[in-house]
Image (cartoon, rainbow, N blue to C red; front, top):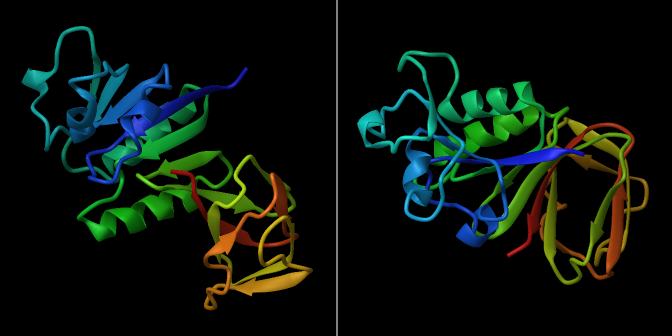
Length: 205
């Protein structure tokens, strides 16, 4: 049975706290602890502690501290820890907010770890990578909005069923965002493509 985990970053855009409460395993990346400290106890706090004083962490919470000068962000350190400990899927929240560059960093991490199931949860969206030669099914999401963006120069042989604008063996170029703002119109819908890499924004809240 797969075990899932949510990683909470310090960014302002986080998923509803009720969603975080559904996870039995919670990792905070440095200042992400401030989002949940009054309602939940994380399994681990990881990072360089430049935005959180290690002295203020209650006893019983594990800590992994790293130097401030390092090659990875605190979020990536948490992802690496999660992969080593066989978590799948991995959910990230609080990875974007007032720092727009942090959001780009988070998207790059999705692409870097594309062979693992990793999701970004904001207050409105589930954002994730879609890989080639896989069929993605959306259930019980009728009337939800969804957008598809190619991360490859061209994503080819894209086909879908159950959307307001279905695709029939089309190509989705990286520099043409015509996959934005589609709508799911059936209780069960599908999408797949033969070659490429797609970034999906799914409205879930």
